[in-house]
Each structure stands twice: as C-alpha cells, then as structure tokens.
Amino acid sequence: MSQLQIASRYAKSLIDLASENKQLAEVYEDVQSIAVVCKHQEFLSMLNSPIVHTDKKLAVMQQLFGGKLTDLTMKFTQLMIHKGRESLLALICNAFIDQYKEIKKIKTAKVITAQPLGEQELNNVKTKFSHWLKAGETMELSQKTDPRIIGGFLFEMGDRNYDATIKRQLEEMKENLYDKSYVSLVEKR
Image (tube, rainbow, N blue to C red; front, side, top):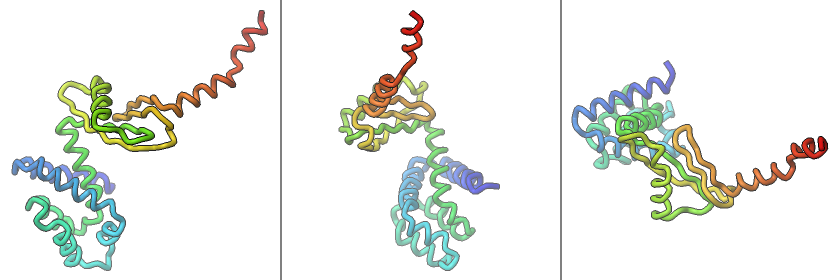
C-alpha cells in the first residue's frame, strides 16, 4: 500500500472520529496548523529522523502545540508518533484537508496576478466565477503573485482555468504576426 493510501485512511479515521465527537471544524483548524508547521524542513527532518527518539518527538509536539490543539487532535498526533507513522503526518494533514473540503463542498480556487489584489477585487473575482460552482458549493480563493504575467489575471479552479493575462495576449499577437496562412489565399488569386 502506498504512503498516500495509508495517509488517506488515517485522515478518514480522524474525520470520522472528529465527526462523532462533533469537533470536525475544530480539528480541521488544528490540522491546518499542523500542515503549516509540516512545511518547515527542519520539523520534517526531525520527524523523519531515526536518531531522534519517540520521547523527544512527543516533547517537541507538546512544546509546539500543547494547549493550542484540541485533545482529540493532540492524542491523534501522539498516536501517530507512538506507532512510528510520524513521517506521514504531512501527508495525513493534506489528505484530511482534501477530504474535509469534499465533505463541506468547498472548491479551492487560485487567482494569479502581477500585483496583489485588494479585498474588493478578490470579491469581484469570486463573483465573476461563482457560476463555475455547483449548487451548495462554496469557493475558497487564494491569491499568488507572478510578475511574469505582466498584467491581468489567471484563474484556476480544479481542472478549469481562465487566462486573461497580458503575457498570453502578447504571445497570441506574436503568433499572429508570424502566421503565413494567408499567403496561400493571396497566391491563388
């Protein structure tokens, strides 16, 4: 069984347990916090290290998250460490977040612009693409900046995207300048 499958099963177990205890939203917040910490290479190295003993790993988790996570989430992370599954913690967090969003019908979308957008502009983008959502779905919009797109924006949601960037428009103009398909039409006359 692959690590992704194992992580997905652990995430599903945590979702089921959190739902039973009516703490799904709180555990989701906890898992997001853990996912942020798991992005730090030093933390991942510590979790994956066979040299660092289980007691030390538990102490680090307690130091980082003690009093900040629900008891359920803290016990779950401790169980993962005791079972030797701490190297899967980042994958479990990502799988949990994906499964939670699927349950709550939250679609993740991203807008890429040359300059950061203000709150009003982000709301305008959400409104413009709200018709891409099915009934009952909501959109979680994040933004990223990339100065290479020059201007305009690129919107991505799932497997769909909308490219209204200046970079794309310039590339199309360049292709049209070098387009010689009209020559054959002129020569035939």
